[in-house]
Length: 330
Image (cartoon, rainbow, N blue to C red; front, side, top):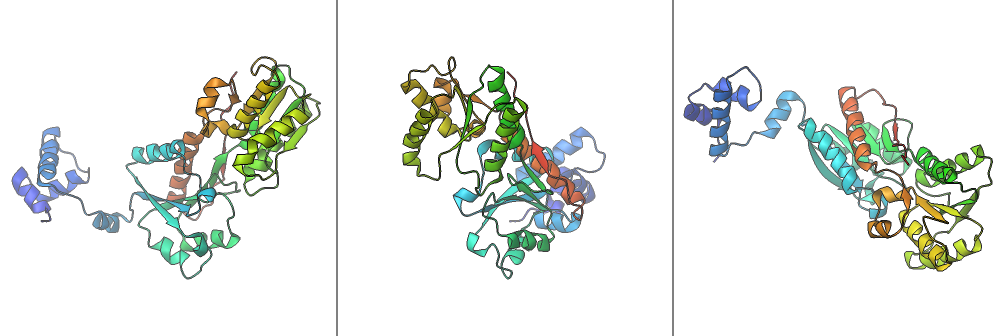
């Protein structure tokens, strides 16, 4: 049975307007009265009518995380989600999660209608690659405030500053006395901004130091063949004394190879990576002294919420994107 304000007021011994204001965290009442009303509401099993509140205030106090149905095109990690949730909790807002079938991304009859029916104040969009240009247009047509996460755009996006992060890591290796430093990466021409940006950061640091760059690509190969490919590439570049890797997985493979070659990782040779901030190889990071960038994903999540709240407040204003960078400390 639905619990009414009238029932709470009768059992609390106060008026209905008083109950309404206390339940909506309004008005000036004694702590004793406030606690009594809240206790009665809790004991009776009262649940506020979210729809009615939304109609009254014009706000849902809810953000929707919109992602792809394709695992390779989304990036929902625990630290990133924690950053979003902590920031929303501080604003007494909730997070809903929704997915849109990739086949319908550019369907003008489906997408705008689907997004308009989401009961939320704004969107955090988690589509990181293979995004059809028409998708951006359809999101704009819904007029829902939206921020893109881990996607590099001029406006309304929050993403790691991969240029600065990789430049930092290269400078760390230079400070250790290394001059022959290699950068091992998948193909630079790829479907996510980080491939080109990480390589650029490496090149910038090496060029400022007046040193030759050694960009080594391992190509698009299945994971089962990656270790062997890395082995062959490292051995073919035996003159290099330090390596910077696009990913943590490849960094671990480099360490294996260097040990096989008789080198001591962390002493004669050093390995670093930008990708270890979300490491899937944490057990190896304890075994190998792999240098890696600070953990930034919680900060990315927090700043995504911060940017989205600005969008919600001023929905017609495009917000300058944020590139998140946490300087490396030796």
